[in-house]
Amino acid sequence: MNRAVRRRPALATTALALLCALSLTACTGGPVPATGKARAADPASRPDLKPFYGQRLQWTDCATDGYECARLTVPRDYARPGNGRTFVLPVARAAATGPARRIGSLVYNPGGPGAGGASSLEEGMDESFGAAVRARFDIVSFDPRGVGGSVPALTCEPAEAEDAEAEDADAEAEAEETSEEASDAVAPLYPRTEADRSAAASGARTAADDCEEHSGPILRHVGTEDAARDLDVLRAALGERELTYLGWSYGTSLGTSYAEQFPRRVRAMVLDGAIDPSLDWRQRVISQSAGFRRSVDDYAEQCAEIAGDSCPGASPQEIRALIERLYQRAEREPLPVAEDSTYAEYGGMDATAVLDAVSMAMYTPENQWEPLSEALREADQGDATKLGALDDEEETEEGTEEGTEDPGTAEEEQEEQKEDETPEPPADNGDAALTAVNCLDVPHPRSLRPYWDALAPADQAAGVYGTAGVTAELTCRDWPSGGGRPHRVDADGVPPVLVVGTTGDPATPYEEAVSLAEQFPQGMLLTYEGLGHTAYGRGGACVTAKVDAYLVKRERVRPGATC
Image (cartoon, rainbow, N blue to C red):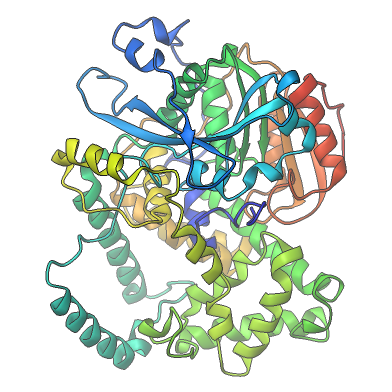
């Protein structure tokens, strides 16, 4: 997912975070049949939900010219919607360019979990849609509950210290300590010893405890099933009888959940970069980490074709050897970086950071392989500064994603809900939201043994990408449990859904798109033969034409359709 009219890689997530984030799975040994959901014919008919379904969005100009912004109120707990506790969600729209032929609103989710949809739209993501769709639909998105400009929002970071000077002094002392002890703090990509495993488990528990401490009151209310119910409230607030929807990456999970809960409210639905809900947590780790491993192999094989002379080796073998060499060196000692690097305070880039940087560059080869190549070459020569800076632009831009907010209004709403006593969330709380949604959606094993047992199979299937993926799941061991389990799609009555799969997708492997399309009644699969994460908006005119024809005319895609 790209930037400046394209979606960011995984949108506000690191590669290893995605290995965790997309593992929307449980602690069972395999998929189980869906139990079926009791679907209300019209949720708006419930007296306690009528105030939410009856609201109409009040549009005003966004901070960015050309977009309109509003705010949607949804119940924090759908089991008790009348208790006065809510989420207030930013919404943004780009008006249809051909209003005389307007069909309605098209709502999209850009990915994550943890990506702010309203902010992504203001950054120009409407340009990812084809001209035919932009002409006929208002393009709309929102920040899911707990994410971005949501009030309240998730945070897993400590509250700011009251004494700034004391904080600076502590930070300086900690930096010195970190520099002196950096070599002792290097985490292996494959924790084999008891000491390594104990450290990994301890770090994961600390991360879970931080989230519970600072966002405890809302942690149990940010799951995908509730976000899908918010999507239906948004549909009603937009004045739409049926939902037209497009979801990228994690957005496919959100769309699938909506289709299961409200199958007869779907007009048209595109799921691009699919997540298969039938996989358990181990299967998810192996599926995705194998996808990253294949993509890195693709990079080695096709680097010269895409990145030209910047490739860090003269052959695929040389490139693979260089990457492996960097992983091994970074496991022994963090790779050196300049003093102004983000990684300087950690003593350099450890192996996990190097793997993150390499994996992130697999999302959009056309934009990322050349700078990755230059960064790898310099890292091999002893300076990992460029490697550590590959996503600095993303982080800087993400940090300004609050243009959809009226600061005064947000402060008032935070004050009204201050019983939560959570610290002010950072400008980009994507990592916290990613962890919260992943861990809540489906339970993970509570004991450590299943994680350690998963390491060898993950290593065999995907090498260090697999073992690092397993370790990333540890945080969910100490998380509040959700009620879901791996299951096949249960969406009887839903109209034909279009699933788009990219054959060389690193984060959502093509096989999952095939499976998801088969699970939907009348599901359709569009195959994009290419590299990188997702297809619509970056896969060329063929993908755009077929998706647009489906969204505008509900024109079906024939079996075996390929671009």
